[in-house]
Amino acid sequence: MNFDEYEKLAARTATFDNAEKETLYYLALGIAGEAGEVVEKIKKIMRNDKGVITESKKEELVKEMGDVLWYLSQLSRFLGKPFSEVARINIEKLADRQKRGVIASEGDNR
Image (cartoon, rainbow, N blue to C red):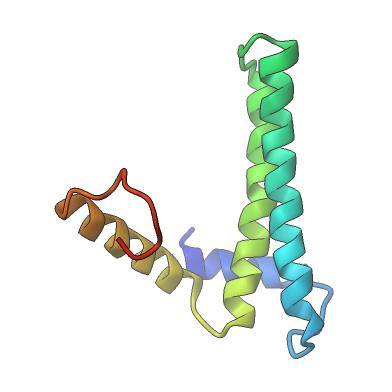
């Protein structure tokens, strides 16, 4: 499955009107919330399991990562940009930073 296929299939489960201005807030908060759930699960792995990631914990993390992916894909759709374009632009940005030796630096425009 490619990014655009995922975006299209994920949209089937969207329950918001893509034209509403509140959609931007909804999607942004959804990304933050789901990313927080990923981090929370990792925190508990570190705290409770001494950093040992069992297969069941991996499955839980993958499910939460999928939720982050869902919100990102729908934000892409809301912005009218194919999800594959978001992925392509990110890879190009990272390759450029690597080429210039600033991949580990700070700031958006490095």
